Length: 284
Image (cartoon, rainbow, N blue to C red; front, side, top):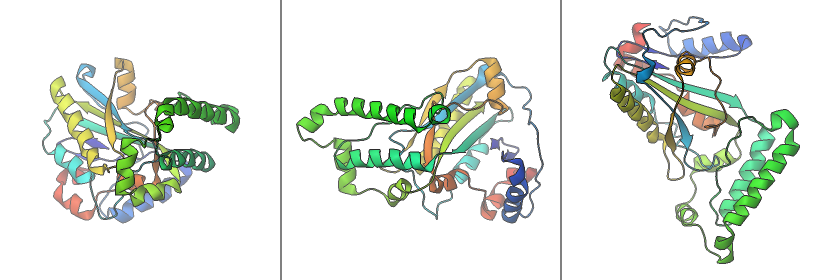
């Protein structure tokens, strides 16, 4: 998504054989939309010294879900409201990428995390590797990695288990009860998900403010179980150029595993009401 005070544009990357299906879905939602195929969208007059880039990352383990209420239209309205406050030299890119994740691997990971939670220990996030191990050497090495992770967790939680103490965070969540969205996620398909925010302004402080505002919008999806935290990304000018023009693949470093229900909130198309309220959407 590209935001400025003049226009709001949506970009979708999809397989060649699915383009007509995707186009049909979009046109059924937007009766006045124009859909164009682009090999690349160039952003002119970019001062890389005044670009702020960040990625949104789960605060807690992947097993815990964000809000998935069917009746909510945020974060879109809040995102669009920010565009009304932007200066002419400013733009924002919200780049969201999803990649299918192996169903059996997620079931294995979710069960480990849920069993740990039920035992009174808060599951810890597994650090994402730079490469997906299973794509190179199969489930065997992935199993070894997860087993090693379990051993470390056991050592770190030894005192808690020895004293028969329930983690305070777990205790609070147990008393409240897990949200339906989390229960649903445990048995759901998930996508490896990256959320990147790019903000540009002639004033670096303004770019930082815009970045903070955009990342704050995603707090609207927070539950008492999980939320998205903003992580600033440092990069060279060359890499910034590639990032802004969406030609750099995202690494696994700040990857989240999100359910298809969480994705329904990240990939929403503006409703007819939003289209009427924000003229920038109709500009192209």
